[in-house]
Length: 446
Image (tube, rainbow, N blue to C red; front, side, top):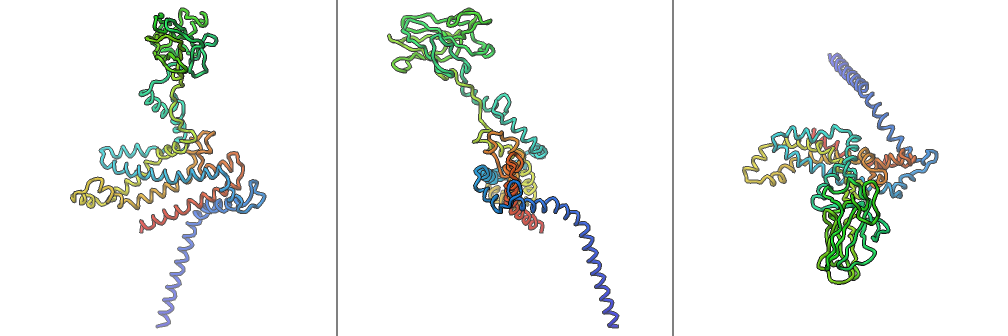
């Protein structure tokens, strides 16, 4: 009887073992395709890149750690590392803060769903399209770049632009000066005299609507009069240096009477017909001068894609794309906060700011951490926006590790050894953040 029981138990144990082996084989069958894909797309490229990083640009000579040493010796690569560090510090911090602020605000608006949808829409736009959009938005020309159009509009609302930035004095007609001003009369004048100051270089379409036919102010005993005019008659007729029929005055020009080595004795502004007059002048010799402010180029706005601002400008485009992502994730965490804790704090007399700082933010800390670390991983790999938005002359100023890796390997550098070393460094920087995030997910799921 005992032998029979022992044999039965053995058969049961053998059956269990066979079942376990079948389960393992079945698991391997299902997992094997994923493992093969993972090996082909992840493991092999990582191992190949590491091996390639130990050879020179052609891949024929073993250089060991030479490429890794070159990373810290190349100024362009060091600049890319500094830019990547700036991205890691600034972009995730701003995005997490904006996402938190917007998630809290959306709880207090009626159209919260529509608001979230609008903010999340940029996530549906590829980085290529977003880069093209912001490349156009950041154009220096206000007629093309919407941001500079707004900046120029605000600037011109508070400060008048120069009257005639393209005007220049007609040579050989008694006016001296270089392009852009100032311009002065070659000789001196005394009270009771007048002067004609002829200019060219003003397109007919640039003339103010108020401009009238040029007319010289009549001389007065204690005054100097004159006219500033466009010394060009329609059809090219007329005599240079002389006010001819059909020639218009240049209104709104600031004119100065200067004496004693540069002291401004009087100032006048030309009328619609270009005439001006300095009155109440003491006897003496004067030079008539038109300041450079009359000829300053119009304000062209901010050079968003210049060396100083190109990285912040690209980070701004990145914020536009990813703010909705941060807001939605943080909003999901905010919805899971127990409402009784918030209501209890309100009943105890806590203000909304105190509730936000001492209850909402601490309870959201795990979600905020996951969002922040996820964004850190993402910004370390940013490539598209930097490559598309940054113009060629300032590409080096905007480079991050990913763009530098591509440029070194395929974008003209043709040094795949150094490029592979950069890819390995980038991987080593991303892996700790990925491990941290995975552990956070496991803890939250357990």
